[in-house]
Length: 117
Picture (tube, helix red, strand yellow):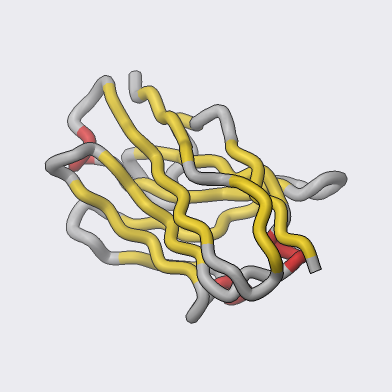
């Protein structure tokens, strides 16, 4: 079992930045692919970005060049740095972990990100 706890969400204006963090516990963190998903009101949950154990990362096109995912295996954390935020980035963001990509075996409780225009 892996427990995931997100932090860092909030309300910002378009063009601002936010940094989401996810703290993991329970299993060997470095074995897991880690990622972020999001779900906007009335929409399906969608993949945003992920990173494997060695630091290789991959992104959905709509965040490429704006979002950066990173991990610190010594601290069991994964971070999503979000720059140049847009109102359409408004959603609940979920941290996820899994042994295979895209990570979806374990989920955090979600954290709200709201971007005003």
